[in-house]
Amino acid sequence: MTPPASAADATVADIVKKQRALERKRWLVVLFFLAVCLVSLVFDIATGPSLLPVGEVVKALLNLESADEMSKVIVYGLRLPMALMALVVGAALGVGGAEIQTLLNNPMASPYTLGLAAAAGLGASLVIAFGSFGLPAAAAVPVGAFVMTMLASAVLFLFASARRFSSAMLVLVGIALLFLFQSALSLIQFVAAPEISQQILFWLFGSLTKATWENLAVTAAVTAVCAALLAKDVWKLTALRLGEERAAGLGINLQRLRIQTLVLVAVMTATAISFVGIIGFIGLVAPHVARLLLGEDQRFFLPGAMLAGAAFLSVASVLSKVVVPGALFPVGIITSFVGVPFFFWIVLTKR
Image 1 (cartoon, rainbow, N blue to C red):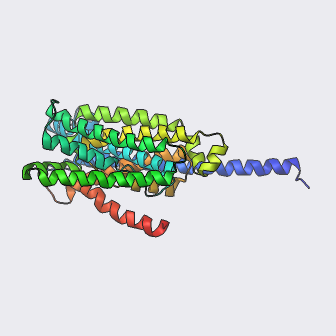
Image 2 (image 1 turned 135 degrees about the horizontal axis):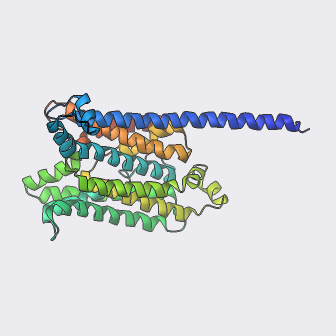
Image 3 (image 1 turned 30 degrees about the vertical axis):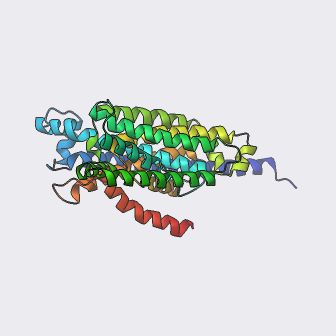
């Protein structure tokens, strides 16, 4: 016996009302991440070898007449590019980790665990150890890191395009690439002179001090374009969380979606890593935080992971400058200290 039409309409209206309330709650979480990013940006600019008052930083950013000229020079000439680069790189790695975890249905997947970061390290190390190959010194290391990352991505694309190749197997290929590139990197450090080996080690730590307005503009443009293209497939990526068989049953071309997503993530993360070095665990931590608070709906999960990654790296940048007053720790060390316990937590809770 079917319920009366009025009762059915009331049930549907109640479901819609609850869904709208849930969506408003999720948008508030996204706005909270955005607020954390803005606050962290101000503190990131204020901290450093010479501390600036927060109020003075705000005046300089707003270009008020009462702002001190020296503060403007420090803010715009030195600290703002690094602070903005922390947000952009964190956003790129957060989105990259989120979409790789979605695509492969694996909570341990990220650009780092798929070997892309190790490939960037190998490319940069080859340039540092054997010369710039005719390129300008400032551009040679980022270009080497980018090229090697894209070569590693090409191997992943090759396997992902093969028929009857599952997501689990792609993760195993990524882990194999990770060990291969790390072994080659260790060999280069072993045979290189001590001063060269030290330069390689510093690059591998990951540092925002390499940020300039030029490479910030390139990284921000690439991240914005790739994120926008990923946002076009939010419904397909959400459906993929139901399982590959169900997604295929809904008419989604899984092979095309897998290749397209991998290409966008590879270009975005390769660009970010090539300018700042290896910064691990953001692509692992940020998606899990966003998923915990926002769920699997990609309309909220994608911007949430982006802002969570940006906030994470920005806060890590602040911590890298206040751990030891007057010293500047590589930010990659800070993210590892936070990321490793989180990694163990995932292993213990997710089995």
